Image (cartoon, rainbow, N blue to C red; front, side):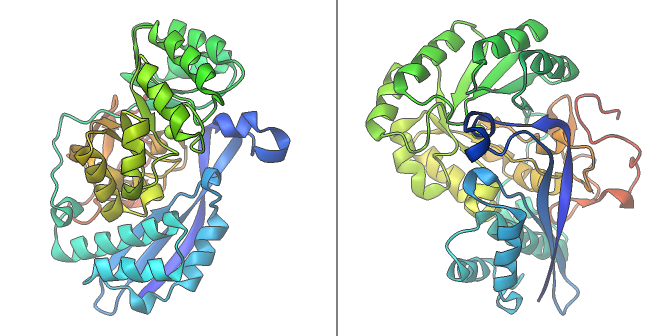
Length: 371
Ligand SMILES: [Mg+2]
C-alpha cells in the first residue's frame, strides 16, 4: 500500500470565528480566519485499488495540518489493507493514541477503496441505508458583528434551519439581529463552551427559550466544567442541551448521558466512519439524541459523514457550503436537503474531483446554488 498526502487550504466565504477564537484574546485565541487548511490522502495498493480520505484538523483540539502530516509520516502504509480495515485501524492506534483527524482520513480512504473495488457504496459496507428526501442540514453562521450575522442570515434565506455561534460578548444583540433578519426560522445555538458559569449558561438558555424558535443549545459550558455543574444545568434547562466538545467518541457516552440530552458526533473527532457509527450507536443506547456535525471541510468529508445520516436525529453537515474552492463533488444540497441522487459516482464514498465532471462553473451547492 502507498499513502500520499497533501495540504489544501479551503478558502472561507466569510472570515470564520467561534467563541474560543474571540473570547480568549490574542494570547489564547486564533482570531477569525480566512482559510482553513485540510489534508487529503490517497491510498493505492498493488492491485490497482485506490481510496481517498480527508483530515480536517481543528485548533480547538490542538490539531493542525502539521500534526496530521507528522502522524501520516510516522504510519507505515504497508500495515494498512483494504481487505482488513479493523486491523488497519488497530495498527494506527499503536502509532499514537492521538490524531483522530489523521486516523479519520485513513479510515475514509480504506472504506472508499474497499467499496469502490466492490462496486458498492460505503453505506453497504457499513450496513446502513440513506433515506432520500429526509435529511436536512442546518446552515451555520460563524461569529461576527450583529450586522454581519444578520447579513449572513439573509444570504442563507433558502436554508430552513440556521445554527448560530454564540458564547461571545454580544450574544443578545447578535441573536436579535439574526432573528430580525430571519423571522420564524428554526434556529440552533452553539455556545462552543463560551458561557463559563452554570448561572450564566442558565440565564442565556432561559432567554433563548423565550424566543420560541430555538431547537436546542450546543455545548453551553466548557467541557472541563464539573459534572455537578453540568447536571445542575441539565436539570434546569428549558431547552435540550447537546454536548460537542464533551463528546469525542463512544467512550464518552456515559458521562454525556448524565450531562446532556444529546451529543454531536463528528468524524474528525471519532477518527472516521467506523468509529463515528459506534459513537452514534453508543449514544443512542443510552437514550441520547444525536446530531452529526462537521468542521470546515470539503465535500469529501461531508459526503462521507452523510453516509451515517439515517442513524442520527439532526444534521449539521454544512462545512462545504462555507467555502469557495471545494475541490470535490459528492452529496448534493438543495435548500438544506442532502441527496445522493446526483452523486458523481455510485461506488465508494461517492465523491469525485470537481474538475472531472459537469457543473464545475457552479458555486458549491449552497443556499444560492443553481441546479
Ligand atoms: Mg459545536
